[in-house]
Structure formats: C-alpha cells, structure tokens
Image (cartoon, rainbow, N blue to C red; front, side, top):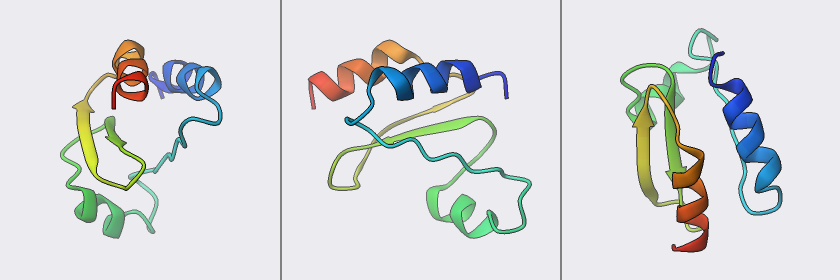
Length: 74
C-alpha cells in the first residue's frame, strides 16, 4: 500500500508505454501467480520487456528512474 503513490505516478507518467498489473497476495486466486513468478515477499516489482522476458525485479521498493531507464534503453 505504501508503494501505491509511486506506482500510480509511474503508471501515469508512462501511459501507453507500459501496463501495470497489481496482485493482492492475500487474494485466494493469487497463489498460482505467486509461484509462477517466484514472489519472495511484498512488495515485489517485476519489469518485463515487450516480449514478456523479465528484465529486472525489485523487492521492497521501486525506483521510478529505473523504470524510465528501462523504457528508454531497452
């Protein structure tokens, strides 16, 4: 929840360039996604390229500059 303002800002700043997907780890439908993507804790941020390959992940916080850099220098 604490990261929501940062993630919302990234989503607005890069509208049309990326898709933000939020998963509630306490939701009963989440376990398949958690194991598929190897979540180890919350919050976990995973950045994928356009072909679906994982480019990087961050556990605990997200740096907006890193997102911008990933979009401008794939």
